[in-house]
Amino acid sequence: MANPIVAIVGRPNVGKSTIFNRLAGERISIVEDIPGVTRDRIYATSEWLGRSFNIIDTGGIDIGDEPFLTQITEQAQIAIDEADVIVFVVSIKEGLTLADEKVAKILYRSDKPVILAVNKVDNPELRSEIYDFYALGFGEPVPVAGSHGIGTGDLLDCVVKEFPSETEEEQDDSIKFSFIGRPNVGKSSLVNSILGENRVIVSNVEGTTRDAIDTKFTTDDGTEYTMIDTAGIRKRGKVYENTEKYSVLRAMQAIDRSDVVVVVLNAEEGIREQDKHVAGYAHEAGRGIIIAVNKWDAIEKDGRSMQEFTQKIRQEFQYLSYAPIVYVSAKTGQRLNKLPELIEKVNANHAQRIPSAVLNEVVMDAIAYNPTPTDNGKRLRVYYATQVATKPPTFVIFVNDPELMHFSYERFLENRIREAFDFEGTPIHLIERRRK
Image (cartoon, rainbow, N blue to C red):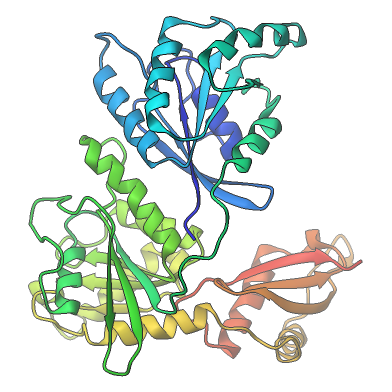
């Protein structure tokens, strides 16, 4: 099930980006005391009470002739349309303004749950003044101070209560996979070539695909797939059209819904910095990953071309060392027949579960081969390991002191686990816990 979406909206300079950073747990938005600094929607993933959700920070909604104001208003409207819950931010310092009332009218039309957050209540004496905001018609206001983190827990409690219930989606045993990548790397052409029909509009104009499009198909061996085509993910700052920015959110939702993500590179253009950012979305989401180098037919090759390109990929995508690489051509169909089979394999590895007895035998053999490190005379002791989750495979290792587990030794254990079991195409997570 895709993560619920929370949009943070309000007029400029009420502290939306500060609240966004608090909820996201890091400084993502630019925070500056000048109206209109946040000109783009910015995305993050957060969690509260066991529920993961995506947050959208928006430019302020206002009326006037200031630079970028029309674009900011349109971007906020797109975020509102996509959101499951809206956090409407106002400021206690300025009190209820005409601009707040105009924003409220926009939110009335959205027919979405709205949580009213009164920001900058960093003094208990100001709490009595929040009741003026009842006039906006969104129920009891929640007092917060984004800069100090005061009241954010209460705000999140209110937000989570409004999330759609976690009911299971219609039973669908198909393998869900998506193509992601920069615009114009050939994602839509790959969809068409695999299906053998013009299911998706294909054009050489960057960013033709605006939405994520699902297509089901079955291979000759009876395996069912759901293919999700997404709009190209562009660099923030190079995205000018509202529909382009809208497509980034759609791509993030497609990754949420996928079992396996196919990161598409363009062989003609080589590896760009943005390719690594795009792949990072899927890696951080813990999805199975395949790297597909498209347009392989379009470049001049010799006996070492594939090997050299593979070396470049491994160098530039060091965090994706587990991802298999396939060289394809949507135009000629080269190696496309291998893609569904590889997706099926990666999906199986992503859902693989290892019996504890077998896992511990591998871990203990690894420790015997390379003894645990010491720190200030204290040695790391590993007592037991067990798998606690799949998709991605997640292992808890019980130790005497988690602080003694150096990242290099953790990497050693991960590599030994990968050597013992086939986890090609999937990240695996190791978690150290002190044995009670």
